[in-house]
Image: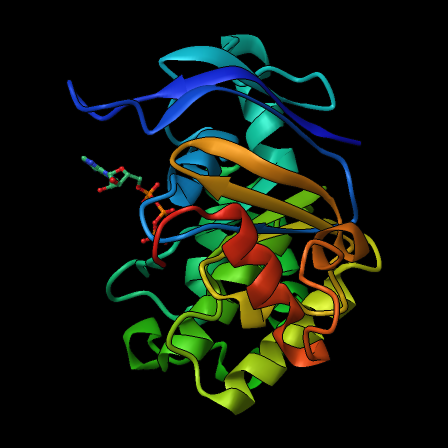
Length: 247
Ligand SMILES: Nc1ncnc2c1ncn2[C@@H]1O[C@H](COP(=O)(O)OP(=O)(O)OP(=O)(O)O)[C@@H](O)[C@H]1O
């Protein structure tokens, strides 16, 4: 099943295009979308989440086109999205926040409420279900956001910079969680840090200045590093081969 961007362009107001006729197909189990700050990763994720519309071109999941009113709801139900800044609904508990997302995605109130319990268990937040969401830490808040993508049974989940600013133990929790999700969901994770390129990803996309600089499997990406590069530095070395300017 693939997420297909076809000649996709986007610009904010009259500025230079952030994405310029981008063609990309993401059909792998676990994809990492890597690129420097300002490369257009969040914009691409926002388009894939059908939160913003491309100024030209299209995005489709399994051929479903969110630009068509008749298929928009099924697209949004199938594609889960964790934005870079998770904003909980003020005053709601953790569980209410998650159920609310399910309801927004078209579930009945009772189904959304029932499923929210499972979704929170999956992200290991079951014990905090009744806590007010503003009391969560940054890492817990992101896990609540991931539960929001699980409540409506997404087929693919887009996680925008999910580990930025997390301490090592929260990063480990996140890695375990993604590994568990991969059993039945496709995952796309965006990051600007090469150290996030973990063995769990089987596909790498490098985005820079709105263009795809590399797309392929992890071994192919690492092979771009110069021979003799120490194992732990290969991702960074391969990345700097592709990104022309200082990062
Ligand atoms: N709402 C907005 N209005 C105007 N320009 C924007 C807006 N959001 C992003 N941009 C600009 O679009 C470009 C791409 O931004 P985007 O957030 O998609 O990149 P990114 O790769 O996700 O960066 P980062 O890793 O820093 O989050 C940047 O130049 C940014 O300044």
